[in-house]
Length: 456
Ligand SMILES: [Zn+2]
Image (cartoon, rainbow, N blue to C red; front, side, top):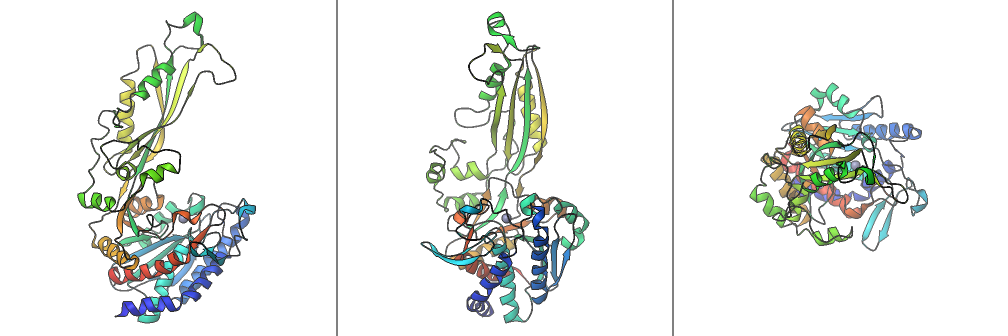
Protein backbone atom coordinates (compact mmCIF):
# COMPACT_ATOMS: atom_id res chain seq x y z
CA UNK A 1 0.00 0.00 0.00
CA UNK A 2 1.34 3.42 -0.93
CA UNK A 3 0.14 5.07 2.27
CA UNK A 4 2.29 2.64 4.23
CA UNK A 5 5.27 3.60 2.08
CA UNK A 6 4.61 7.30 2.78
CA UNK A 7 4.32 6.61 6.52
CA UNK A 8 7.54 4.58 6.47
CA UNK A 9 9.27 7.42 4.65
CA UNK A 10 8.08 9.86 7.35
CA UNK A 11 9.51 7.58 10.07
CA UNK A 12 12.87 7.20 8.29
CA UNK A 13 13.32 10.89 7.56
CA UNK A 14 12.15 12.25 10.93
CA UNK A 15 15.65 13.45 11.96
CA UNK A 16 15.90 15.58 8.80
CA UNK A 17 12.39 16.94 9.40
CA UNK A 18 13.39 17.94 12.94
CA UNK A 19 16.52 19.65 11.60
CA UNK A 20 14.44 21.67 9.16
CA UNK A 21 12.06 22.73 11.95
CA UNK A 22 15.00 23.73 14.17
CA UNK A 23 16.31 25.88 11.32
CA UNK A 24 12.97 27.66 10.98
CA UNK A 25 12.76 28.10 14.78
CA UNK A 26 16.14 29.86 14.78
CA UNK A 27 14.59 32.77 12.85
CA UNK A 28 13.21 35.15 15.53
CA UNK A 29 10.01 36.10 13.70
CA UNK A 30 8.30 38.04 16.49
CA UNK A 31 5.54 39.90 14.66
CA UNK A 32 4.49 42.41 17.25
CA UNK A 33 7.91 44.10 17.68
CA UNK A 34 9.12 46.18 14.69
CA UNK A 35 12.72 45.31 15.66
CA UNK A 36 12.05 41.80 14.28
CA UNK A 37 10.53 42.85 10.95
CA UNK A 38 13.54 41.60 9.03
CA UNK A 39 13.37 38.26 10.78
CA UNK A 40 9.70 37.96 9.82
CA UNK A 41 10.66 38.57 6.20
CA UNK A 42 13.44 35.95 6.50
CA UNK A 43 11.00 33.37 7.88
CA UNK A 44 8.66 34.03 4.94
CA UNK A 45 11.59 33.68 2.50
CA UNK A 46 12.73 30.47 4.19
CA UNK A 47 9.26 28.99 3.77
CA UNK A 48 8.97 30.08 0.14
CA UNK A 49 12.35 28.43 -0.61
CA UNK A 50 11.25 25.23 1.09
CA UNK A 51 7.87 25.21 -0.70
CA UNK A 52 9.56 25.80 -4.08
CA UNK A 53 11.91 22.93 -3.39
CA UNK A 54 8.85 20.80 -2.66
CA UNK A 55 7.49 21.63 -6.09
CA UNK A 56 4.98 24.34 -5.19
CA UNK A 57 4.66 27.55 -7.15
CA UNK A 58 5.40 29.71 -4.10
CA UNK A 59 5.91 33.39 -3.47
CA UNK A 60 6.17 36.02 -0.77
CA UNK A 61 3.26 38.46 -0.94
CA UNK A 62 3.86 41.86 0.56
CA UNK A 63 1.21 43.48 2.79
CA UNK A 64 1.32 46.77 4.70
CA UNK A 65 2.59 44.61 7.59
CA UNK A 66 4.49 41.33 7.45
CA UNK A 67 4.29 39.34 4.22
CA UNK A 68 2.02 36.41 3.46
CA UNK A 69 3.35 33.21 1.93
CA UNK A 70 1.27 31.69 -0.84
CA UNK A 71 1.99 28.43 -2.61
CA UNK A 72 0.00 26.52 -5.18
CA UNK A 73 0.23 23.00 -6.56
CA UNK A 74 -2.50 22.21 -9.04
CA UNK A 75 -3.73 18.67 -9.26
CA UNK A 76 -6.85 16.55 -9.42
CA UNK A 77 -9.74 16.67 -6.97
CA UNK A 78 -10.97 18.94 -4.23
CA UNK A 79 -9.08 22.21 -3.86
CA UNK A 80 -7.70 22.21 -0.32
CA UNK A 81 -6.18 25.25 1.35
CA UNK A 82 -3.82 24.84 4.30
CA UNK A 83 -3.37 27.71 6.77
CA UNK A 84 -0.70 28.24 9.42
CA UNK A 85 1.31 31.17 10.76
CA UNK A 86 5.08 31.67 10.82
CA UNK A 87 5.19 34.54 13.33
CA UNK A 88 5.72 33.93 17.02
CA UNK A 89 5.05 35.57 20.37
CA UNK A 90 7.69 37.71 22.12
CA UNK A 91 9.96 35.73 24.44
CA UNK A 92 10.12 37.83 27.58
CA UNK A 93 10.64 37.25 30.42
CA UNK A 94 13.83 35.81 28.97
CA UNK A 95 15.31 34.80 32.34
CA UNK A 96 12.57 32.19 32.81
CA UNK A 97 13.70 30.20 29.74
CA UNK A 98 15.97 27.23 30.32
CA UNK A 99 17.83 28.13 27.10
CA UNK A 100 17.90 30.78 24.37
CA UNK A 101 14.37 30.68 22.88
CA UNK A 102 15.80 31.11 19.38
CA UNK A 103 18.47 28.45 19.80
CA UNK A 104 16.06 25.49 19.83
CA UNK A 105 17.05 21.90 20.56
CA UNK A 106 15.65 18.47 21.31
CA UNK A 107 15.46 17.92 25.07
CA UNK A 108 14.70 14.81 27.10
CA UNK A 109 12.06 15.38 29.77
CA UNK A 110 10.30 12.99 32.18
CA UNK A 111 7.35 13.06 29.76
CA UNK A 112 9.44 12.31 26.67
CA UNK A 113 11.48 14.14 24.04
CA UNK A 114 10.46 17.68 23.22
CA UNK A 115 11.45 20.31 20.70
CA UNK A 116 12.16 23.35 22.87
CA UNK A 117 12.07 26.88 21.46
CA UNK A 118 9.78 29.81 20.71
CA UNK A 119 7.28 28.82 18.02
CA UNK A 120 7.90 25.05 18.41
CA UNK A 121 4.19 24.47 19.02
CA UNK A 122 2.64 27.81 18.04
CA UNK A 123 2.78 27.57 15.11
CA UNK A 124 5.97 26.67 13.24
CA UNK A 125 6.09 23.06 14.43
CA UNK A 126 2.43 22.62 13.58
CA UNK A 127 2.66 24.16 10.11
CA UNK A 128 5.74 22.06 9.33
CA UNK A 129 3.77 18.86 10.08
CA UNK A 130 1.80 19.58 6.92
CA UNK A 131 4.82 20.50 4.78
CA UNK A 132 6.67 17.37 5.92
CA UNK A 133 3.67 15.21 5.04
CA UNK A 134 3.70 16.76 1.55
CA UNK A 135 7.46 16.11 1.30
CA UNK A 136 7.16 12.40 2.13
CA UNK A 137 4.18 12.11 -0.21
CA UNK A 138 6.15 13.67 -3.06
CA UNK A 139 9.13 11.38 -2.43
CA UNK A 140 6.91 8.30 -2.72
CA UNK A 141 4.38 9.37 -5.37
CA UNK A 142 6.54 11.73 -7.41
CA UNK A 143 3.82 14.39 -7.16
CA UNK A 144 2.27 16.49 -4.42
CA UNK A 145 -1.07 15.31 -2.99
CA UNK A 146 -4.17 16.53 -4.84
CA UNK A 147 -4.95 20.15 -5.48
CA UNK A 148 -3.33 22.33 -2.82
CA UNK A 149 -2.88 25.93 -1.79
CA UNK A 150 -0.69 26.79 1.18
CA UNK A 151 -1.41 30.10 2.91
CA UNK A 152 0.91 31.19 5.72
CA UNK A 153 0.45 34.36 7.72
CA UNK A 154 3.03 36.44 9.61
CA UNK A 155 0.78 38.58 11.80
CA UNK A 156 -1.36 36.08 13.69
CA UNK A 157 0.24 36.92 17.03
CA UNK A 158 -0.29 40.63 16.51
CA UNK A 159 -3.98 40.71 15.64
CA UNK A 160 -3.79 39.89 11.89
CA UNK A 161 -4.28 43.48 10.67
CA UNK A 162 -3.54 42.61 7.01
CA UNK A 163 -5.46 39.35 6.88
CA UNK A 164 -8.98 40.34 5.88
CA UNK A 165 -7.90 42.98 3.31
CA UNK A 166 -5.49 40.41 1.81
CA UNK A 167 -8.24 37.78 1.68
CA UNK A 168 -10.58 40.22 0.00
CA UNK A 169 -7.98 41.25 -2.58
CA UNK A 170 -6.93 37.69 -3.33
CA UNK A 171 -10.27 35.96 -2.91
CA UNK A 172 -10.13 34.21 -6.27
CA UNK A 173 -6.79 32.61 -5.51
CA UNK A 174 -7.67 31.71 -1.93
CA UNK A 175 -11.14 30.34 -2.40
CA UNK A 176 -10.90 26.56 -2.13
CA UNK A 177 -13.33 23.75 -1.35
CA UNK A 178 -12.08 23.35 2.20
CA UNK A 179 -9.57 25.03 4.51
CA UNK A 180 -7.35 23.06 6.87
CA UNK A 181 -6.10 25.06 9.86
CA UNK A 182 -3.31 23.65 12.00
CA UNK A 183 -3.14 25.87 15.08
CA UNK A 184 -5.10 23.91 17.72
CA UNK A 185 -4.38 20.94 19.95
CA UNK A 186 -5.29 17.46 21.02
CA UNK A 187 -8.15 17.15 23.52
CA UNK A 188 -6.40 15.72 26.58
CA UNK A 189 -4.58 12.99 24.65
CA UNK A 190 -7.22 12.37 22.01
CA UNK A 191 -7.12 13.61 18.43
CA UNK A 192 -9.80 16.19 17.78
CA UNK A 193 -11.30 18.27 15.00
CA UNK A 194 -12.78 21.58 16.11
CA UNK A 195 -16.11 22.02 14.37
CA UNK A 196 -17.91 24.61 16.53
CA UNK A 197 -16.67 27.97 17.73
CA UNK A 198 -18.77 30.25 19.89
CA UNK A 199 -19.47 33.81 18.81
CA UNK A 200 -19.67 36.97 20.86
CA UNK A 201 -21.99 39.88 21.61
CA UNK A 202 -21.36 42.63 24.11
CA UNK A 203 -22.85 45.71 25.67
CA UNK A 204 -22.19 48.37 28.26
CA UNK A 205 -25.02 49.66 30.42
CA UNK A 206 -25.27 52.99 32.22
CA UNK A 207 -28.17 53.69 34.55
CA UNK A 208 -28.63 57.26 35.69
CA UNK A 209 -30.79 58.12 38.70
CA UNK A 210 -30.41 61.46 40.47
CA UNK A 211 -28.78 64.29 38.53
CA UNK A 212 -25.79 64.28 40.93
CA UNK A 213 -24.31 62.24 43.78
CA UNK A 214 -26.48 62.68 46.89
CA UNK A 215 -26.02 62.56 50.68
CA UNK A 216 -27.63 59.33 51.88
CA UNK A 217 -28.79 61.00 55.10
CA UNK A 218 -30.55 63.81 53.32
CA UNK A 219 -31.99 61.77 50.43
CA UNK A 220 -31.75 58.11 51.48
CA UNK A 221 -35.08 56.31 51.44
CA UNK A 222 -36.68 58.82 49.14
CA UNK A 223 -34.25 58.92 46.18
CA UNK A 224 -33.65 55.89 43.93
CA UNK A 225 -30.09 54.52 43.98
CA UNK A 226 -29.09 53.40 40.46
CA UNK A 227 -26.72 50.75 41.87
CA UNK A 228 -29.66 49.18 43.68
CA UNK A 229 -31.53 49.11 40.39
CA UNK A 230 -28.63 47.73 38.34
CA UNK A 231 -27.81 44.96 40.82
CA UNK A 232 -31.48 43.98 40.98
CA UNK A 233 -31.74 43.79 37.19
CA UNK A 234 -28.50 41.90 36.64
CA UNK A 235 -29.11 39.72 39.69
CA UNK A 236 -32.26 38.56 37.96
CA UNK A 237 -30.43 37.59 34.76
CA UNK A 238 -30.06 33.94 35.93
CA UNK A 239 -32.51 31.59 37.55
CA UNK A 240 -31.42 29.11 40.22
CA UNK A 241 -30.86 26.44 37.55
CA UNK A 242 -28.20 28.55 35.85
CA UNK A 243 -30.45 29.53 32.95
CA UNK A 244 -30.42 33.04 31.50
CA UNK A 245 -33.83 34.64 32.09
CA UNK A 246 -33.78 37.24 29.27
CA UNK A 247 -36.95 36.45 27.28
CA UNK A 248 -36.16 34.91 23.91
CA UNK A 249 -32.48 34.32 24.76
CA UNK A 250 -32.58 30.63 23.88
CA UNK A 251 -35.11 30.87 21.02
CA UNK A 252 -32.59 30.46 18.19
CA UNK A 253 -30.22 28.07 19.96
CA UNK A 254 -29.85 24.82 18.05
CA UNK A 255 -29.81 21.55 19.91
CA UNK A 256 -26.64 19.53 19.66
CA UNK A 257 -27.00 16.55 17.31
CA UNK A 258 -27.15 13.27 19.21
CA UNK A 259 -24.05 11.82 17.56
CA UNK A 260 -21.97 14.84 18.61
CA UNK A 261 -23.32 14.64 22.17
CA UNK A 262 -22.35 10.95 22.23
CA UNK A 263 -18.83 11.78 20.98
CA UNK A 264 -18.43 14.43 23.66
CA UNK A 265 -19.53 11.97 26.33
CA UNK A 266 -16.82 9.64 25.06
CA UNK A 267 -14.16 12.30 25.68
CA UNK A 268 -14.25 11.66 29.43
CA UNK A 269 -13.89 15.37 30.21
CA UNK A 270 -12.69 15.81 33.79
CA UNK A 271 -14.63 18.92 34.74
CA UNK A 272 -13.64 18.65 38.39
CA UNK A 273 -9.97 18.69 37.43
CA UNK A 274 -10.53 21.51 34.94
CA UNK A 275 -12.32 23.64 37.53
CA UNK A 276 -9.95 22.48 40.26
CA UNK A 277 -7.05 24.19 38.44
CA UNK A 278 -8.78 27.54 39.07
CA UNK A 279 -9.95 26.88 42.60
CA UNK A 280 -13.53 25.86 41.77
CA UNK A 281 -15.49 22.62 41.71
CA UNK A 282 -19.13 23.22 40.78
CA UNK A 283 -20.36 23.69 37.17
CA UNK A 284 -22.23 27.01 37.17
CA UNK A 285 -24.11 26.81 33.87
CA UNK A 286 -27.49 25.32 33.03
CA UNK A 287 -27.83 22.45 35.48
CA UNK A 288 -29.53 20.12 33.00
CA UNK A 289 -26.52 20.30 30.64
CA UNK A 290 -23.21 18.47 30.71
CA UNK A 291 -20.08 20.51 31.50
CA UNK A 292 -18.87 20.26 27.89
CA UNK A 293 -22.21 21.49 26.59
CA UNK A 294 -21.93 24.45 28.98
CA UNK A 295 -18.50 25.24 27.50
CA UNK A 296 -19.07 24.55 23.81
CA UNK A 297 -22.69 24.40 22.70
CA UNK A 298 -24.67 26.62 25.07
CA UNK A 299 -24.76 30.42 25.12
CA UNK A 300 -23.61 32.41 28.14
CA UNK A 301 -24.20 35.81 29.69
CA UNK A 302 -21.29 37.22 31.68
CA UNK A 303 -21.08 40.35 33.77
CA UNK A 304 -17.47 41.32 33.09
CA UNK A 305 -17.43 44.37 35.33
CA UNK A 306 -19.71 46.57 37.43
CA UNK A 307 -18.94 49.86 39.04
CA UNK A 308 -20.39 53.07 40.41
CA UNK A 309 -20.43 55.18 43.53
CA UNK A 310 -17.62 55.60 46.02
CA UNK A 311 -14.67 53.21 45.78
CA UNK A 312 -11.94 55.11 47.60
CA UNK A 313 -10.52 54.53 51.08
CA UNK A 314 -12.86 54.58 54.04
CA UNK A 315 -16.56 55.14 53.54
CA UNK A 316 -18.66 57.84 52.03
CA UNK A 317 -22.40 58.07 52.60
CA UNK A 318 -23.35 58.62 49.01
CA UNK A 319 -26.20 57.76 46.69
CA UNK A 320 -24.42 57.75 43.34
CA UNK A 321 -25.88 59.39 40.31
CA UNK A 322 -24.87 56.57 37.97
CA UNK A 323 -24.23 52.83 37.87
CA UNK A 324 -22.36 50.92 35.14
CA UNK A 325 -21.81 47.38 33.92
CA UNK A 326 -20.00 45.70 31.03
CA UNK A 327 -21.40 42.44 29.72
CA UNK A 328 -20.56 39.90 27.06
CA UNK A 329 -22.50 36.97 25.71
CA UNK A 330 -20.92 33.87 24.15
CA UNK A 331 -23.15 32.81 21.29
CA UNK A 332 -23.76 29.46 19.67
CA UNK A 333 -24.86 28.57 16.12
CA UNK A 334 -28.24 30.04 15.23
CA UNK A 335 -27.91 33.16 17.40
CA UNK A 336 -27.60 36.63 15.90
CA UNK A 337 -25.35 39.05 17.89
CA UNK A 338 -27.57 42.05 17.15
CA UNK A 339 -30.71 40.22 18.14
CA UNK A 340 -29.16 39.15 21.44
CA UNK A 341 -28.21 42.75 22.13
CA UNK A 342 -31.76 43.91 21.36
CA UNK A 343 -33.28 41.25 23.62
CA UNK A 344 -30.96 42.29 26.44
CA UNK A 345 -31.69 45.98 26.02
CA UNK A 346 -35.45 45.53 25.84
CA UNK A 347 -35.32 43.40 28.98
CA UNK A 348 -33.29 46.02 30.87
CA UNK A 349 -35.42 48.95 29.67
CA UNK A 350 -38.60 47.22 30.80
CA UNK A 351 -37.26 47.19 34.36
CA UNK A 352 -36.11 50.79 34.60
CA UNK A 353 -38.63 53.02 36.41
CA UNK A 354 -39.76 56.34 34.91
CA UNK A 355 -37.45 58.35 37.17
CA UNK A 356 -34.22 56.74 35.90
CA UNK A 357 -32.69 56.52 32.45
CA UNK A 358 -30.63 53.82 30.82
CA UNK A 359 -28.18 54.07 27.96
CA UNK A 360 -26.08 51.48 26.15
CA UNK A 361 -22.86 51.59 24.25
CA UNK A 362 -22.54 48.75 21.78
CA UNK A 363 -19.57 46.45 21.36
CA UNK A 364 -18.76 44.69 18.07
CA UNK A 365 -20.01 41.12 17.93
CA UNK A 366 -19.52 38.06 15.80
CA UNK A 367 -21.74 35.06 15.21
CA UNK A 368 -20.67 31.54 16.16
CA UNK A 369 -19.26 29.29 13.46
CA UNK A 370 -20.32 25.76 12.82
CA UNK A 371 -18.51 23.68 10.24
CA UNK A 372 -20.35 21.53 7.74
CA UNK A 373 -19.55 18.21 9.35
CA UNK A 374 -21.87 16.60 6.83
CA UNK A 375 -19.10 17.14 4.25
CA UNK A 376 -17.57 13.65 3.86
CA UNK A 377 -14.08 15.19 4.32
CA UNK A 378 -14.82 15.61 8.03
CA UNK A 379 -15.67 11.98 8.58
CA UNK A 380 -12.70 10.96 6.41
CA UNK A 381 -10.35 13.09 8.51
CA UNK A 382 -11.87 11.75 11.72
CA UNK A 383 -11.19 8.18 10.60
CA UNK A 384 -7.65 9.06 9.51
CA UNK A 385 -6.86 10.63 12.90
CA UNK A 386 -8.43 7.73 14.77
CA UNK A 387 -6.18 5.30 12.91
CA UNK A 388 -3.03 7.26 13.59
CA UNK A 389 -3.64 7.89 17.30
CA UNK A 390 -5.17 4.48 18.07
CA UNK A 391 -8.26 6.00 19.63
CA UNK A 392 -11.40 7.57 18.24
CA UNK A 393 -11.02 11.18 17.18
CA UNK A 394 -13.91 13.48 18.05
CA UNK A 395 -15.58 16.54 16.64
CA UNK A 396 -15.15 19.03 19.46
CA UNK A 397 -16.23 22.57 20.19
CA UNK A 398 -14.28 25.59 21.26
CA UNK A 399 -15.72 28.00 23.79
CA UNK A 400 -13.77 30.96 22.45
CA UNK A 401 -13.34 32.13 18.94
CA UNK A 402 -10.59 31.43 16.39
CA UNK A 403 -10.90 34.46 14.09
CA UNK A 404 -9.26 32.88 11.04
CA UNK A 405 -11.97 30.21 10.83
CA UNK A 406 -14.65 32.88 10.88
CA UNK A 407 -12.84 34.90 8.18
CA UNK A 408 -12.61 31.89 5.86
CA UNK A 409 -16.37 31.53 6.25
CA UNK A 410 -17.45 35.16 6.02
CA UNK A 411 -14.91 36.46 3.48
CA UNK A 412 -14.46 33.39 1.30
CA UNK A 413 -17.51 31.26 2.08
CA UNK A 414 -15.29 28.30 2.95
CA UNK A 415 -15.61 25.77 5.72
CA UNK A 416 -12.56 25.10 7.80
CA UNK A 417 -11.38 21.96 9.47
CA UNK A 418 -9.26 22.75 12.54
CA UNK A 419 -6.84 19.95 13.31
CA UNK A 420 -3.81 20.39 15.54
CA UNK A 421 -1.45 18.35 17.64
CA UNK A 422 -0.45 20.72 20.43
CA UNK A 423 -0.73 19.66 24.07
CA UNK A 424 -2.10 21.73 26.96
CA UNK A 425 1.35 21.83 28.58
CA UNK A 426 3.14 23.22 25.48
CA UNK A 427 3.51 26.61 27.20
CA UNK A 428 2.64 28.53 24.08
CA UNK A 429 2.99 32.30 24.60
CA UNK A 430 5.04 31.51 27.75
CA UNK A 431 8.68 30.78 28.59
CA UNK A 432 10.02 27.32 27.64
CA UNK A 433 7.55 26.66 24.84
CA UNK A 434 7.91 23.11 23.51
CA UNK A 435 6.33 20.72 21.05
CA UNK A 436 6.43 17.03 21.85
CA UNK A 437 8.52 15.12 19.33
CA UNK A 438 5.70 12.58 19.34
CA UNK A 439 3.19 15.29 18.36
CA UNK A 440 5.44 16.47 15.54
CA UNK A 441 6.01 12.93 14.27
CA UNK A 442 2.42 11.73 14.61
CA UNK A 443 1.20 15.10 13.31
CA UNK A 444 3.10 14.53 10.04
CA UNK A 445 1.76 10.97 9.83
CA UNK A 446 -1.76 12.25 10.58
CA UNK A 447 -1.68 14.67 7.65
CA UNK A 448 -0.42 11.94 5.33
CA UNK A 449 -3.40 9.80 6.35
CA UNK A 450 -5.85 12.71 6.05
CA UNK A 451 -4.51 13.66 2.60
CA UNK A 452 -4.63 10.04 1.51
CA UNK A 453 -8.37 10.05 2.27
CA UNK A 454 -9.41 13.50 1.08
CA UNK A 455 -6.94 14.67 -1.59
CA UNK A 456 -7.06 13.78 -5.28
ZN1 LIG B 1 -1.07 30.13 16.80
